Image 1 (cartoon, protein in one colour):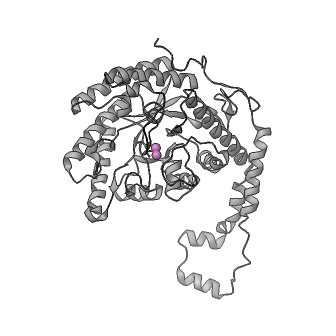
Image 2 (tube, rainbow, N blue to C red):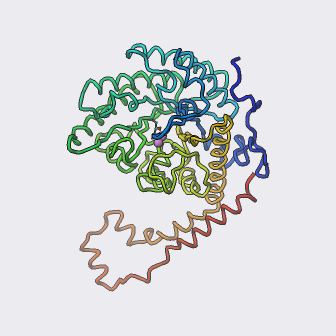
Image 3 (spheres, protein in one colour):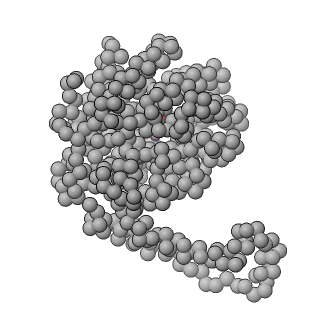
Length: 448
Ligand code: XLS
Ligand code: NI
Ligand code: NI
């Protein structure tokens, strides 16, 4: 076995209960504990993101990175470095006890001098990953093709003005989808980072949307051809790096999927930080996706109240996640999806162990939020209030309106006949905020 990169951790991180003071233990995440009919691990389906955790130096726009990732600075033999990176990634996954990982093709294997070499490099690394997965039991939540780093994609991939770039992107996705399939991936993700525009001065928006619809149909057709059963997931984001991204938010993606007849095969991968950038709460995006039947998976991270870009912090606020967990469990939970930590360490987090602290904290945050959400669901804490709030719609008038049993003229007559509106009823927001606060407080007592 290769030399260990994290020798300080000699056994998988264990659950030790909420009073544990050992930072290398879980206080809430108890993988095998049954809650709301499933193992906690099966509710949360945690995944480690290969790119931020192992393929990122910590650079920012003002300075180079200094995170201890020696394989990223060793450029003499890129494939040897890719193998070293993978050994460390699986050492980390096994020691953390995360059941899944996610990758971009270019995280696993560096791009070659031509397309054929890029493919053979990825195949070599996929074989190595298959061996590691076999040994560790770690599975693949999703794979994706990086269609945004190389300069050829500066003006987009599917939405590029040059069809040769469209073709190149299609070839890259075809290969990456097959690698994902070979590794048993549960989903295939597409984040359209450069599918948007910098200025409308040079942009034919309608044409670009048609190109994107066409691209997605090619991907869906290929998925069926090779028997890949997982969904294709689009990952909404409003902007960055582009000024405007077409997959702006869940609602925009849903409109796009309907227009191009793709709702049967494509769902969404909702990222918390992207939700915030689009002006929504994370829970709003989850609720919307679940309402229209396209909830797929989640990229768990956190923004920053005062920074308007994708800062990708590890999630640390339980309160921020309770409502979203409530919506996910209420929708029946994940099927193929899970929580992927699309999150970066801060640039100053140069201790090797920081990667453990980040993931352990994030897993505990979401497990804690899950415990609270399930307690609220069990008691009907919000549901009873919601049912009561809309109960009028179960009556004669409500049903007639919904069932198309009346016209505008009928409603005019109804009100004219003296059916005045009763005094408005309280929306009870503050009282409900108090209810949620109580469940958060009491989770200590009902928790494990
Ligand atoms: C970038 C996205 C990206 C996708 C995968 O903002 O979150 O990391 O998740 O390409
Ligand atoms: Ni993401
Ligand atoms: Ni992101």
